[in-house]
Length: 305
Image (cartoon, rainbow, N blue to C red; front, top):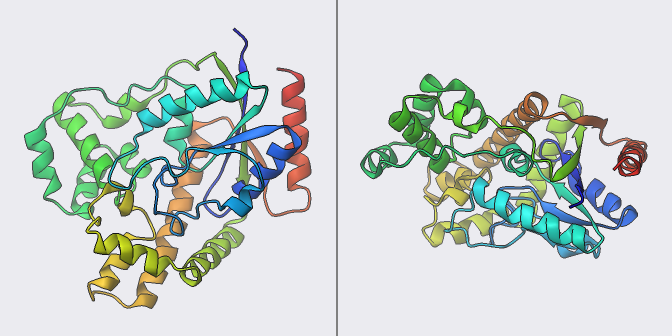
């Protein structure tokens, strides 16, 4: 059985992963798998900066709009689905390209995580569910700071699961997520896009402004009216901040500034994950040589497969 070569493009939000992936897919006969934990959900388009049909430019994409917002799409499910897709794409003579910023999801494809399979305590979980996001995250930060740096406080479901594992086993949740030996079925080339902090933050602020211009408030209001505010998928950046506005607890400008701030913090956490957990070939984004450098690395990689 032949080893499957996989191109993996990672980096913080708004760094330019999507456009690079399209160009590489065109050049190397590729198909793209989204490695974003939020773009799998239908109806979460503007707030997740979901790629449009026009932006796809004829390139086949997978794991976009595959489930409803009320149905959690876990890292374990991503691992299973993506591995099936890698086999299918490879068997059809195409080059699989994974693109995204959700580190745990992407890394799970190439290492055999067990995702904390330690049973459950429904009573304890129900007790935790009564607490607010900040309180839960602070609890996790005290018990397992390593996990706390990798799980956003708005991801209530994931924070509760981490606390539940600690409660059941007495061990940090992060210990259950250490990867084992690489899965030798795949040979990945990790390409990371990076920018200076100042330029990246400016891009993030601009992207949020564009989201508002393209109808983010209206998209969030639909979710709010459907009473989906407690659904894990809707706890992502770009929606929860607007719920406070709908409830009269903040102005629209305050909500926008909070989305920008939370997005900047998220980008910083993404970079921390990728730099600490994966062996990545970093490329400077936003230059006239970005594509050429990436193409050179992919060409060399494929020549040695």
